[in-house]
Amino acid sequence: MSIRDSVSVDKVNTQQDTSDLVPKSIGVLQRYILSEIPIIGPALASGFDSYSSTVRQLRAKEFIDRIHERLKLIETKLEEMDKNYLQSEDFQELFRDAIEQYMKTRESSKHEFLLGLVVNSMKNPSDYLERDFFLRKINDLSALHLELLLFYANPKKAFSLKGKSIDNIRNLPLRRLIGEYLKDIGEDVWKAAHDDLHNANLVSMSTHDFGVMTAASGLERANGMLTPLGKSFAEKCLDLEKEHR
Image (cartoon, rainbow, N blue to C red; front, side):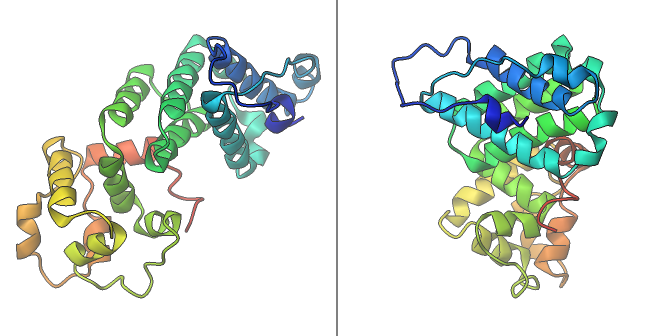
């Protein structure tokens, strides 16, 4: 059984009530995971009702499908997941809040962080207060802030998600490298966003320091930009080892 098998997509009806979407989505995810665990799975995986789609529901289905894809990368570890945690109120609350945020936005950078937070929580359950803090950070930061954090956490992945390659420009100064990454964003705008991250203690220097950098490449500077808090945020919300390396 797969998550996709559990979700049907009918005609879009923007007037349809979506109040029962989140609990059903949680059920889909739990049933998919538990269906992979011997003995427990077959008893719980049967008889899940399908539901029709609105625009929000289509995004919810996308959210579940993408979790399904990411779980393929850790398929051999499914049996090691904490079943009690997956059935807990903590996980259900995290999943509910994440999927609600996902349904509200079309911004791919926010989607990346929300997906990463849920999947990483499934792999390595962490403290509720820490997860809640980062979930609220995703909600509070703009898509541009998150684009910059993704770039500093994993420049190669960030370029890849935009259909670009960093290989031939990796030695550009940092300011020019960011300019290539955020080609359609004015420099004053992304600099203001960067300084917001600096004021939030997520990156280690302000844009005022860009002009006094040494001759190190932009890629080297980007890789050392995140503060300990910024690194923790990225580690909890992004799959930095398995994707786009």
